[in-house]
Image (cartoon, rainbow, N blue to C red; front, side, top):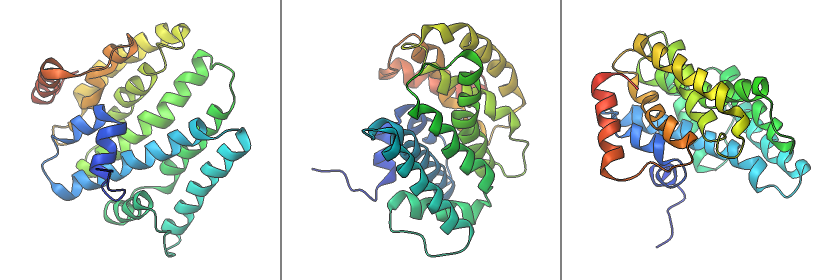
Length: 228
């Protein structure tokens, strides 16, 4: 049976299993739906450079998502794309800032350049992708909390996925993960599912895919303790 294109839960489960697993710890159904809309948006802008056959087509895809944000924030009718529609609802309900969502798009333009990122570029890329997404997810889950501490764990998880193919990034990843384990202690319980997936960062950096009962138990323990 083919996947229902409007089922963002199924989409995120397939393309982003780490963050989907973390979202299982969000009890409020509306908040969980809005977080999944955010992750689906991140998936769409992340895949734009990957699926494009040349940089121009990649730019067109990223521009398309920038136009979605124009529609959302200018109060215009939003194009009929499941992720665009869900993101529009999340923005309205949670007052998500345009600048952060735009940054998630703009950072992806760097991926249209085949040259390897140096440490500084990779760190900036990680903070503007996984880091910003984690901060926005934390804002959805706990709007009254300071969500800054969520950025570093989110960035560490994002960077971890590049390390197997770009081992020169290992030192900066190790430093970032150490920082993430400290910063997450300042994050409230309600917001922790926004960063729980960073529990898998070291495993991802080693080139392994978290799976099975052991990984689920590690994630559950991280959420229970509020520690990575």
